Length: 614
Image (cartoon, rainbow, N blue to C red; front, side, top):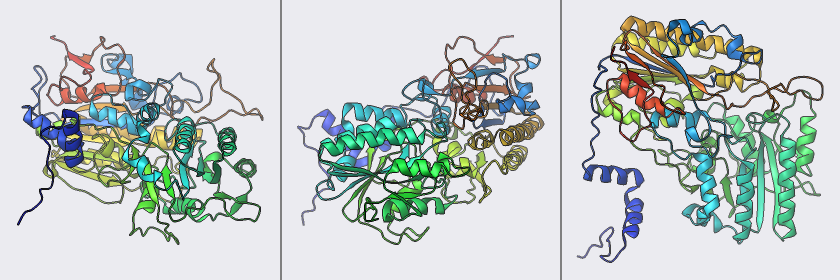
């Protein structure tokens, strides 16, 4: 009996055809591994000529902890932070053991130095040791080249254009952290030029990565664009909306009610508030006492008969337009999973769904996407575990559970679950080696905002890290302390001061353990936030609102972040180099490899340290 082979390759195919074929058949990561193996590649890292192995290394990432001028709006300066202060005190050895590095813009793969860093790109750079084009930049490139319209994802949703509606769901903002307005505008233009006849936009107002109140201007801009499309005969409208922290954009399965409120408005066309236009909706809801963009309640736009103008129906196409993954994963599950059970969806339309990017590589979620994610291979995490360093393997926070392996130990709080795991290891879930890794998660408080309990779980995280170091079972302990970022995002200055003090206390617990075991520490941050809590003019002076109060800044910043090294296990000749012109987070990976007694791969960004002969 003749059996058709699974695939065959014509002898006349071109090299480019063969490459595309192989990528399709085995996947980019597996193809990279195959090429590396066939070229004689080795995972073995050379020994460092001067630095010994065997010293436990603690890597501490302070989330949202930048360096800025000292004033009353710098919560890190206001807070009692004796440990972090001591690390940069000239008397204790700085600048040889303390310095600043860049954590935003081109240093982390973003399009320009006007782009704020974030936890995802920051941890990518920290773990990868190289700079890769990131979410926003990838989307920019795909839109500019037109490749976004040539891929499988767009061609998939395009099948709905003839008889269905194209729904675009995401954050309406130019903050550049989760999404960008100009990308939405280009996607609207491109889709309409390629056959989309009926378009509905479901907006989520920001006020977190941009100034609170900016939602009104964003809606006005979008309404103008949609009006121009209608003049060309395209039925284009805003269909629903709500504030990002109350509608749709929850993460790490903290509160499925947030996603349900979005589902009800976007898919079912049901919400407690109904308006004739989105501009009316935002202005009216913002006029309520204590209202702000982040927490606007869900609303739908209705026609003259009171009927919702844009529920999602059978045969429609849906695109989630955010390029950042963490706050789209839960909605993606609700849109894609047939056996979804986190809330009653009531009605599950048969749709064609694609994300702007793939939000979870291991879950293959969503299965269709418009722009392919960066393939970050050969991360420092993988190198270290393959060289016997009991190294942490990443797993994104989808459920609250304990995963135990035997190796390098990584610990962080639920709200930052994916940062020191998935993102650190190059957008890769799962273990590199189950026998050499251990991961523990501390559940976050539920049902309250972070400024109510600003200490969060910093001390619990530090205690777990301390215990891991003292156990003697781990070569590296890596932690993320989320206080400065998560509380800073609330805009509560007093609470953020408390948060920074708690983070400093947590650092002390870890560094005391490093001292006891004769180890080494590296303390850094992924981006700024808590060091500047006020909106400023070009002269650096605080901006005031119409009532004379300061305009609170809830977003990340463009400030540099610290890197501090030390501990009794650190070679006495180690000091920071002065010949790197603009060091960034990507330089940290080679530095950590050095501290473990290895030299970094040649294509990594150079290490921050050198060893003096004397």
